[in-house]
Amino acid sequence: MSDNENDWVEDAKQELSGMAKEGMHHPSTKPVLTGAAIGAVAGALLPVVSLPLGLVAGAGFAFYHRIKK
Image (cartoon, rainbow, N blue to C red; front, side):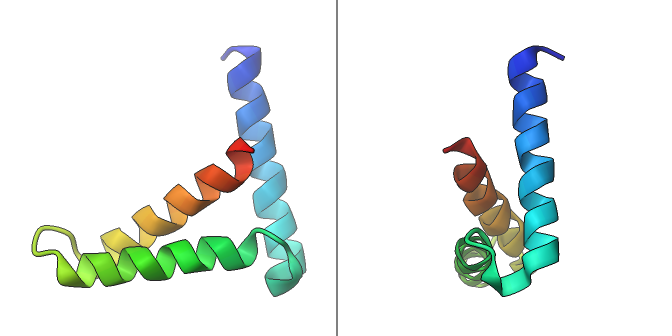
């Protein structure tokens, strides 16, 4: 892996660890949960996407945008 990929992976690990330790008090928790909720609603409304897939996709998208900053 390149240094850029290692930095991204390390940032993701730190962010997940912080979210797990601090729970709702961590600044990334609420945006990720909001993304999960939006994805779940989209998954419920769209015929091709299921609710769990939409939930995971929404949470992943929000998480990615949080650590990309």
